[in-house]
Each structure stands twice: as structure tokens, then as C-alpha cells.
Length: 375
Image (cartoon, rainbow, N blue to C red; front, side):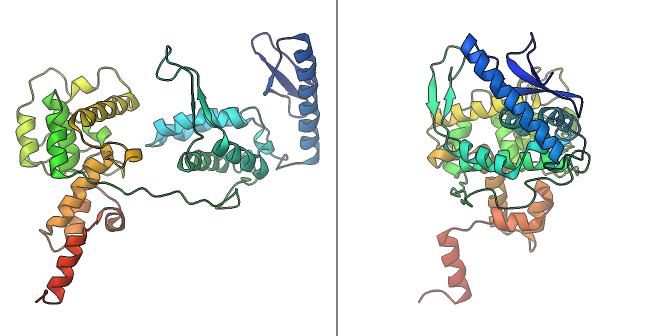
């Protein structure tokens, strides 16, 4: 049978006699007689190359054969579904499927991945309808290095999980060796100033939406956890965060302004504190909708927003800003442990490395205090 077509597909397919598997190629059948003839030759060439690879034992062919698409279906159900970042990972999967989908796992070599990586970093992105079905066609710059790195890391995880059932070893295991070792430029991380926060909070039309932001700042709670809060999670002096990122239930104290705002919430029949931010939406949609609102509020309030313009992000303006403010209070001999417990960080070193920022004035004041000050 070798290469064949199907009435329900616009691509050529291959039948691999040795593995009894039918796999879809990325080769279109073609619209004209000439295209069909040329693409038929390409499909047959791919068939012979694939069969040759299988016969020669290329890239662990002694293992059971499975296509990348088929393995991703399994990996999605059994691994990604359990990840906190499953929404982000599922956004990446179509890009990996487009590049490697029809290949057998055994055909994905380091050279193929290096070629794909280089192509991703240099190929502009074409959006046929930017902003919606009626949007205009736009050509965007190639994806940023950080974006491609996230895609590559997911690809590494997918291939590593195929060991030992389908691969003896991942072709891209370990670090380095996949092209130029460019360093991702680090942007200066912002914290939201008190003046920016006042303008920002005043920009919300619904006080409940402003309260979502205040809880994230004062209680060091991630957005998804705030939107999941139930009335039963309001314990009076603390909130109950049932399923935080590190997995252990935490009870951050409720600040006075958050307590006042919670008490002022209008009565409703929902079990949730913020039912208007749920309304049948998925977890990903809830977060996206609220973050879009934040961007609009910031624009109206004249508050810088977004990494590209050196502005705030939700995480920087809430959990990061709140943690740094608490660390700067120094109200405890072990303030790092106190902040770690409030925010539920598993590692205190993360606080010291990422959140313990100081200003030039604070450094000068510390030196002056240590050495007796200037005369």
C-alpha cells in the first residue's frame, strides 16, 4: 500500500508494513494534476525513507512505533491534565504537532529539533484575521527566544516521558547542544507604587473586581486562587486557599481594607465570593478575562502595564509587590519565614532571590547605619 490517500483527509498517508501502522504526512494531496503527481512522488519517497529507517534501527526503532501526535494525545491525558500550567502547555501543543505530528517518535532526531528551533526563531508569524474573524491579515515578528524555549522545554518533557516504552532515550535529553546558546534578556521587574495602585483601584467600575486585586496584593494570593474563593473560605481573620501551587493549604491573614471590602460585597446565592467572574468559564478563560480587564483599567488610569513597555504585570503588581512590601516592613526577626508562610512559598530562597529588592536609598541608609552615618 505504501503511500495512499483517504477521502476524509487532504494529506497523503503512509502504511508501514513492519509496524502495521497508518500515519498521516504533512504532504498535501494537491489541487492540480501536476501537484498531485509531484506530491505523490514526495509521499512515496517519505515512505521509502521511513521504511529504511525502521529497517536500519534508526533512533531506537527496536521500541514500539508510535507517531508524535498519538503519543501527545496520551501525554495530554495522563500528564498535562495534572499540571498546574496545563492551559499554557495546551496552547503550545498545536505548534509542536505542526512540526512533528506525523513523524514517528523514533524519527525525531536532535538535528530535526535544531532545524525546527532555528526556523521558529527566524520565521515571521502570519495571522490571517488579527483580533477576530473580521480582523485584517497581519505579519508579526518571529517569536521571542523565551517563547521558543518554553516550547522546547515542553518537547523535552514529552519525549522524556516516552522512555522506555517507545524510546530507549530522548534524542534531546539534557541541556545545551541545540543551537546557539543565546541568553534571554532579563527585563527589569516592576513593583507597583502606592500612587499607581491608588489610580488603578479607582479605575474599576465594579468594587468586587477591585477586591480581587486587593486580595492578590495583601494576601499574596495568585489570581486563579482568588477567583476560586468560596464564601466558606472566608474564615474571618484569614482566607483558606485550598489548592495553592505548592499543594499545601494555606491561610493568609486578611488585611483591614480587604476585610472591609469583603463585608461590603452584595449578597448572592452563589457559593463563590466572585460569581460574576465565573459564569460558566473555564479556569483559563476566567483568568484571561480578568487580566484583559486589568489591562483596560490600567490604560484608562494611566498606569504602565505590560513587560514590553516596562510596566506592571498582574503578578508583579500583586504577589511580587505585596511580598516586597512585607519584607521591607521588617516587623519580625524572621520576616522572610513570615512572608513565606503567608504566600505559601515552598522555598525561602525564592523570596531572597526574586523578591527581596532594595532601593538605592535603602542601601545607602543601611551603610550609614552600620558605619555611624555621614558627619
